[in-house]
Length: 515
Ligand SMILES: CCCCCCCCCCCCCCCCCCCCCCCC(=O)SCCNC(=O)CCNC(=O)[C@H](O)C(C)(C)COP(=O)(O)OP(=O)(O)OC[C@H]1O[C@@H](n2cnc3c(N)ncnc32)[C@H](O)[C@@H]1OP(=O)(O)O
Ligand SMILES: NC(=O)C1=CN([C@@H]2O[C@H](COP(=O)(O)OP(=O)(O)OC[C@H]3O[C@@H](n4cnc5c(N)ncnc54)[C@H](OP(=O)(O)O)[C@@H]3O)[C@@H](O)[C@H]2O)C=CC1
Image (cartoon, rainbow, N blue to C red):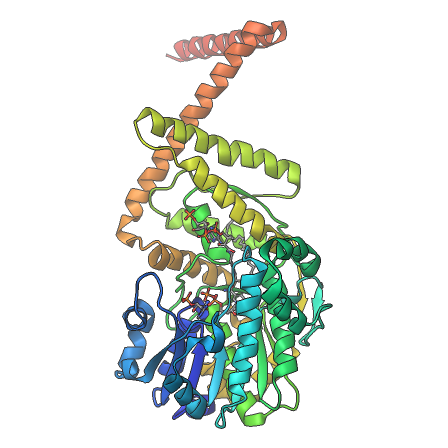
């Protein structure tokens, strides 16, 4: 019997960010391994014209929750959506709901965040810092609370190259930042943002670091722990391999590569690709919840959920395996044949962006115009290149994360718990994982049917022929122009033609002799 699964039976759990990538997998695993769990409260806001109930219905009826319904048929009764907006005072939770949350909650998993790299500092502080502070205040009024688990990111201190499982101080106190956001206007915030974030690449990593300091400062006498995942990727094993439902991290780039939009990228091939499967992060998080509640460590423990120091994979290996898989199971309606080149300096990056990305987009737009359609490819390409430029920082640096607490926790688990809540990344076979990841992207993100693979292969053949035809035509045009203008080009041309003529004549003569 799993001790961790037993621990969660009859517990009331509160999850923020349960509609997000990580939150959904967390909820699924909790229900699947502890079907006796009392209730999971989830703080949800209405979104895209959907009510809370419609959002929950959609999640429960997704492929991800198919297995859960077998082991916990009344799962829909155990999810209690609470209308909440983490950007509002008291999260705009009704009095009755707040009362219930305060009196019943046993464990909190705080996953909600804005993960956008281009978020305005005010927005990122509100969600990643102020909301964390408010949630801690709420937690301090919960008499039954046993543990508060905060999800941060391994990149919150990405300005350092070696990162320990400790909270690093921020030069400006989070409380001062929170206060200043209330009275500074947007233009002043824009001006001070680069100074505040310093050598971090964006407001996301900066505010996640502030969030950790808030957790440390305002945890009072709560049992608190922080989990820091690196780049969260598709599921490795559970509930099935390759599940993914958003474009964040590598997923969007896998699509862009598979569809032939992205053919080169500025990356350091040997830099560590610190991707971590979402189910591994979730298993660790659940185990941390149990350990924090049962063992009540004296100080706030930080757990790195990273792969680099235990089972490293680099971007080169990852890129090659992505391409090899796409070759076997191509994506439908590709724009160009997939290719992946890593460039290492700004000049070659700009060159390939012009030649391999923007030029084909311009030509395609020209074709769309000719056929009476609206051009759109250049706009799309420019957006993609903007996205890539925001991710570049993470594929051109390597970090070393120590994982002592994570390894200590693994050793504290019973063999059964190590199996049910496996977060031992040393067991991960990268090639197999990446293959399943690409397949998952095709099935669950692009919603492409595997029956369409022969047609997709046919399409790639057609693209290859167009590519050869185009290059030959381009070569002949350039050559023709050169011959018209340069004596040297003419001489080379006559030499090649006469050489070919002599070769063919010799070949003909020798074959006539044989007959
Ligand atoms: C050719 C060689 C390739 C190599 C070969 C093989 C490729 C695959 C192998 C892997 C290669 C390298 C992978 C590197 C991945 C590095 C990721 C680093 C992540 C660091 C994580 C830090 C960890 C965290 O804690 S945070 C969680 C992660 N957060 C994110 O990832 C958020 C990033 N996204 C954003 O901030 C925004 O989306 C933004 C600012 C980039 C764009 O915002 P915008 O307002 O323009 O609109 P959106 O609606 O959000 O999207 C616009 C457009 O871009 C598409 N898109 C979105 N995200 C991605 C993406 N990650 N990759 C590609 N495309 C993406 C989106 O679909 C939209 O498309 P449209 O068609 O225009 O609608
Ligand atoms: N994905 C990754 O690569 C990594 C993620 N992390 C961390 O993991 C955690 C989860 O990330 P992930 O699941 O990927 O992110 P998602 O963007 O998928 O999910 C974010 C969640 O936060 C919720 N949320 C955002 N704003 C509000 C709001 N105002 N009120 C209520 N809820 C809100 C979203 O709700 P809604 O559906 O309504 O938008 C959603 O449920 C984050 O803390 C992130 O920093 C750390 C490292 C890497």
